Image (cartoon, rainbow, N blue to C red; front, side, top):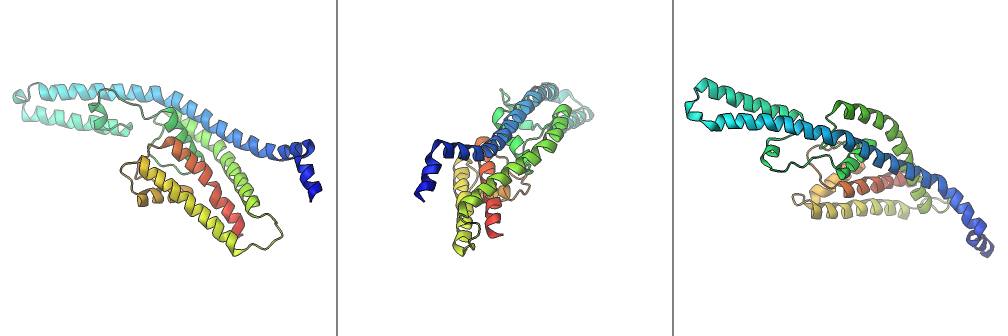
Length: 257
């Protein structure tokens, strides 16, 4: 036993361990670089396009509001009705482009596409979740998204499976040993504990979410269901929650099998 420990602490033992860990480190690094590079490209494509679309619809909105409010008493019912119809169509057009009427009421428009939101978007694309709160609206962005997902989803699945196997190897010290019930409960406790802690963080950072809402969000995120009913602003925390939490169910699966 002492000889084995000395071998592990020796330079050769450390080098051997580094060689074993190097493929895992390279795989995780490649996935992270793929996520951040994709986020940069999405932001580069979508931010200018979003600003262009906003200026176009905002200008139409201001013209119609000015016509309606200028002298409504001198307008005929037909003219007023036409202006209202045009106003409605402008709002519908803006909505289809990802804008809302309330966006036109703010003096300084803030783009939805930022570096943080782009990272969150690329993460949800690669994990096949897709919350629907942020989508590319430009043709170039949509084409890039399809190509990005085709190559990125397999890479992400391989990385998550690799991390899951690493977690399983830690929990199962002896592969020939029968799996005990205690280890199965340990996996469940880790999974529930992770989701509970994440839910507490979400409920603190999101004012409109209670613990149940946050726990539900974490649960469906980890099992890759599609959630479209809430709009999360937690790009960084959501990114970490998905990447770290996604390996726990897979690692737990190897424990139970």
